[in-house]
Image 1 (cartoon, rainbow, N blue to C red):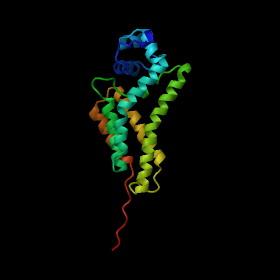
Image 2 (cartoon, one colour; image 1 turned 60 degrees about the vertical axis):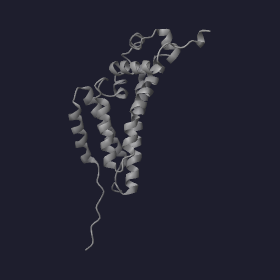
Image 3 (cartoon, rainbow, N blue to C red; image 1 turned 30 degrees about the vertical axis):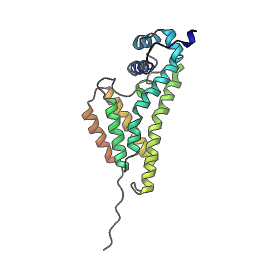
Image 4 (tube, rainbow, N blue to C red; image 1 turned 90 degrees about the vertical axis):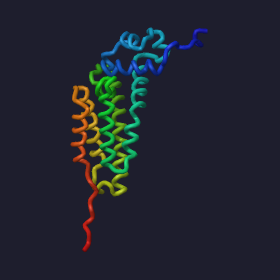
Length: 203
């Protein structure tokens, strides 16, 4: 039976290639022909393995995100809010400037130029970006509880600020800004992270 035959291609490798096409061209700018050429398969194989273009895009973004989740996890595990923000932004810069991949971030570039019929793609990518912001929000709230951040810190604004800087670093990377320069920008952003208040000593 045809249904029992092996696909004849490596799914992980095919997803790697699909990620790169969507990353370079965006969702709207990518055709099935672009995908099948890059993935080295024919349209029936693509549809059988991944469904339609949107389903493949969702799988590609999942694949991309899983490979980059580690730097968010590493960031929130840091002992201070400052170290968490610094680690996150350094991870963003490293991921955005890999020499063998497109510069920037798939979750930003993949949906920048979506047509009205594909607005849900842009919305889904925005939700994925919000996940990083929510992780940092939780980390900053813990920092307030621990006394690492001042009690009046607006954690929501601070997490939004760090997420905005992260997105800006990705856009700058896609524009050709060097890794060293991006790291300098990230370090400059650390000035906005509040430091713990030092209690006045009593003589």
